[in-house]
Image (cartoon, rainbow, N blue to C red):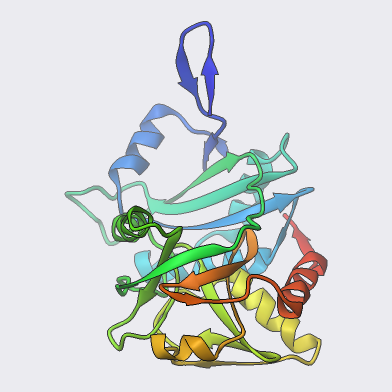
Length: 275
């Protein structure tokens, strides 16, 4: 976001494309009014993405679940290449909606369209983060959908209470995920992932596979707040990378260690797929 000195107005660095073409105002208004869509976010470097196949599979699966139609993945890749033609490094968000849906009518035969937002690359967050546990279960948590109001309200609540972000607790008072990231925990050389209804993140899945390839052990388990004192570390991850947690509520964690170095090393050497 920058300032147009001549006209004294803010100018966005974001470029928007609908079905591969620069978005006009009608298309942007249509997306803004239609709160029923799903999305994925990714970091593009030199025209390639870590876990691209997982991102595309997420979009395909969600389109099938939400609209009962198939996503044209080949066309989407062509649209993405067009959007990134002059931008080999970027942060990208791809949203999928139905152009014939509105707040008043949702025909069964959905006409799919995609909105691609292209921003400057997201800096990798390195600073340890303090999070506050808050009870909440997302609606249909297996989908990365547009219902974000409650997540951002929880984040704001945590920030107002002196934390950096939130950790969500399910109905059993066990940890599930963060508002926009996955959570992992370390016990000796064991990686622990919350066993709860939540979104399976692309970065999480890449790390799980990479950890297994080096002979590391991991499992899913229910993680209650009382369990936190037994862990040797905790971290968050999403498409922007991996970073440690300093604490959850009043429970501190070491903000560095061999486990974190190994995770960063695994992430750094993960191959990227060309778009």
